[in-house]
Image (tube, rainbow, N blue to C red; front, side):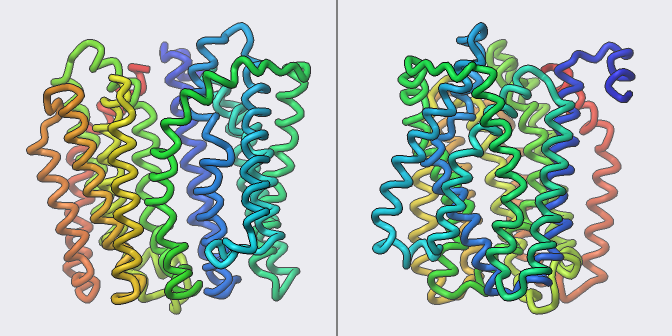
Length: 476
């Protein structure tokens, strides 16, 4: 009904689909924050930490094992092979499986030597690789749905799968006491695997099981240079929990993981905006309308910086909702994590331009440099200062990445494009709040006064921000 109303007002299908995808993503991500308080109370800190380590390894190993074939290369395939999309999808699925099997054989053969590093037993490792074999089918189907602006079935399936997965995990934890890690992971992923298998068969039948290996070479050549970039980004986001579990223990990893989950709440805002900012950036770069691009970006980053500030100041209340009092100390690493997330998002406004000019290697250099530095700093500082150091290493490395990507953009385009004085001012403000707000946690009056001031600022700029967001959506 809502979609019909929007069509009556003349909005194109792409805009309606964009709003639907935004709502779907918000609901999906919101479930993480709804279920986290349940998991932190049903699982011990050691169990919660083990689950976090598993999910971190899954995220990083999946980059190589599934080869990110559902990313940009798949969209290119939808354009290049418009009349053969079914076969292309099935061919990419089989290619992903071949790569997964090769990675799996190597990992299982070397398991006795790398198990101390992984911290994952054979049943959980088997679960992980079964996910790697089946998940690409669902990823390809979703990518095609987005490409063709088909949002209804996708929205229902994604939301229902997420809800049923959470219910299944919680029920299994309740009825399988003493096995919290297995219950959480097998219970949660069993629903997703059923969905993945359905779409595996669906894609195969749509293609009539026809495979065209000629599509493989182009996909491999396109993605191979990007894998270090994709992997570095996930290392920067997930390696901290693995290193903390190894150097300090699973309980510390659990606390850091919860703080990081809270810090990522604000990315729901950014990821939804950036999905529309990318085509808008491409359009403005093509027309060399950098004034409009800079003006729009200023409004978006201003909104995002205010959202980050509110989250930092509201962190104690968020933590009280998300976890029992045994997690209380991790409130002090939420500010640097949120600050790091802000600069992580900032790098996209530079990287989007670099991608337009088809120079992704510069983004890769920045990502790899930041990821390597993050690991090095963690191994030096965590043994001395505990897991709190990981929050500040994350902040420092994301700042470095955004700076490197800015200079890469300058190298590619020869100009700044954006209003860097304004963006730098916002970055300094967020950095100051990230570094100093912990002291405000002892002064609720001052903290609430600042929250009120930021909320007033949101109200003042709401019309400007909403007009910018609508302009992004319509431009698609």
